[in-house]
Length: 174
Length: 157
Image 1 (cartoon, rainbow over the protein chains, first blue to last red):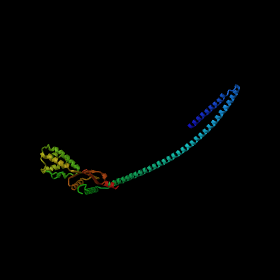
Image 2 (image 1 turned 90 degrees about the vertical axis):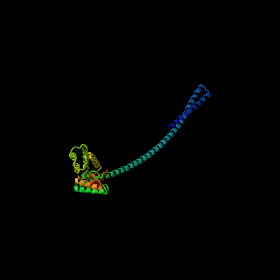
Image 3 (image 1 turned 45 degrees about the vertical axis):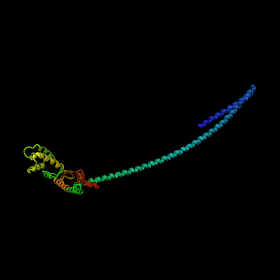
Image 4 (image 1 turned 135 degrees about the vertical axis):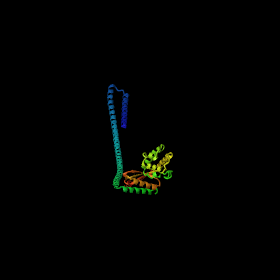
């Protein structure tokens, strides 16, 4: 855009310079000859027309050149915009691909972690259930046995235990 | 612990009647009570003075010594009782946890069996805990051993 403005400014300067040259050319003609007043008036009119014609030609030529240049630059701008658009599209496509890959990776990682957590949870639950079952069986066995043993059997169990303690050297000689 | 018969006056007849930690603690209390009385002797026999102050075991022991004229004289009675107290303090205690309330005969039987095994005088402390189901748990000189049926069941499951 800045280039376009610079070009327009340069063309305007050239145009102004051409106008100035034309004025000086005409002025030189009028200074060289000193016609009489009537003749001078006709000459002046003719000069004005000639000058006007010259200026119009110059302006028309400059306008065409400016128009051509503007069109060229518009074309460059369009090409540049199209190129940038294509690059942006490519960039978006690549980013989209990266996001999809990252999302897939994160999802896969979460699934793996979830599976591990589930395995741990299941193992812990099995251990808990195992302990509960053992405790229940143990409690029932204790209740049943505790009620079934009479004093005589209790005394025998104590004597047997003392013998065992003796053999193990816990009480006296092994 | 000094030998039971090494004393000038034997402690055997007293110690043979002690089987449990409770009995031992009772007699130790009795000895502390009559030790103070030994320094304030009044007329009459020492056994008659302590009859209402102590339990039957110590009373019978003192009384039998008096009858046999083996009880030390008033001047040395304090030392004798102090020696007896020290001897009793040195007796080992074994704690048994049982699943039932043991009869006195059974307690005595256990105590005699232990004395035979260990080769020295010991007293037993019995604690009842039905949760052990059967058998016993022994605590002796800071050691602990579980010979209960509950422990066996816990090992099984």
